[in-house]
Length: 298
Ligand code: PEP
Ligand code: MG
Image (spheres, rainbow, N blue to C red):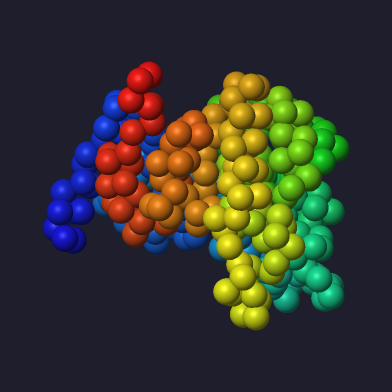
């Protein structure tokens, strides 16, 4: 069976009735790039950039960040690489970051909230991403967005970064930007948020835990934790519709994107891309190639 799957490495991501929906890879370090390429990922749909900040003693500098993004961009060539800006907080700690303890880190100062509090850290990362944009096909996506004001702040920072790079004579390309839809608040203002960006990424891991009000790591809730809950599935549909209304591509990039029991459902909802860990690319491709998106009479 594994051999049959491996034959799909170089096959297209296309349904039985001819719809193409790219399968991208989620990666958490540069080591995963090779397996993403090996399994024929269309690109990187989610690069969890926190890995550069965790498990170390001091801040990564702009040059170090830049070199890593540049290498990723060059390795992937024309293929899109979406860098998710740092998703740090009391739930993802390193001593030098001096993040205060919180009683409820998952509801706390994490993701974009943390980055907008630490403007220097955030600006350094955005500068590194823009510098690397010159060397490939980069996108940039923001975690844990829950209000439009966060987008105002990000847009202002991007304007600053671009102006600085221009005046320093450093080349960059325009980067496609995206919002991770992973809080119920973001879903409810999906159209307003979609107007701000080029694409939406659906983070089903956080979206599920916030929608069900269940910590995804709590062992006591493991049996009750149902990511097929109709509330979650309907939210996904709402995000896809809001995105399409505002001309955004919508990529599903939480773990649920790899759940082949739902592949056909997602495709019928109109999802434009799926992003999964490299090891799941082939099983998802198999399910996608066996799915139909249109009804018989259409
Ligand atoms: C998610 O929340 O679904 C997601 C993709 O991000 P992370 O798992 O890194 O929080
Ligand atoms: Mg998340």
